[in-house]
Length: 311
Image 1: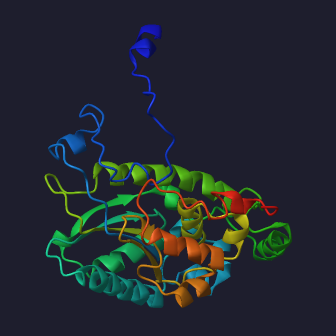
Image 2: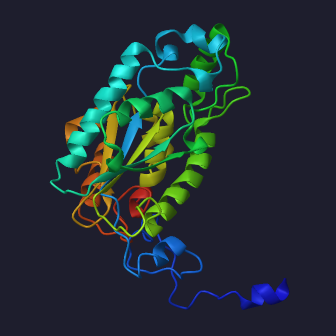
């Protein structure tokens, strides 16, 4: 074991800590032994997907009748007829968005929560695409809904949600379930997986390096809000000001001129304000539109002196 550790290469003196987007399409080529997918790309830099599209599942049986949670396990709750329609309509919107770039080689790659309502939403979305346009699908358990604790008692759940409002939406943990902070922890793991997948082009078909790939994440309202919080380093207070995405709705993170993902490339200021973004968050999204991977917005609350009120 000692010999093995001794043979492991140490970081050079020029190594530095990187922010979450530093390693994405930064021009570095990983050793073939560690990343065979990149080795197959003949040493080229893997282009970033053009978009990361976040989709909330269509209307579910639980959205219209909360008593369903008392007799049906949460992972088995499916879509209503309206939810299926919302899923199919969302697929059409995504197809029109990604095909509107004018590229001939555009594709979509899906990550999906394993819950029935998200899988059914994915199937509804998929009706809008020919098989040749779908680069792949990965079922990802870390994208599941916040766990509220097995079968739910309606009256107890009403009381628990009232307590959550007093305690704080992010830190309150449901009995036998999760808090949003718990979801944050598992979403951090998923973000690292997604970052690695982007960096090595794992979702790209063999031998291809198209910049016209689009990632679609089909998940749940709270999970998607936590994903955005983790990606953009939003604070707990900023997270608690966000609203749910509509059933069958989507938010689009799209690369700006510098290569980073910004919500303001596709969405308007008014749309993001309705979602709950404050002025500092909007200013940061404006910065993201032109910034490059590896750069840091020192004027944003969590990155620089703006965190300290006496400066």
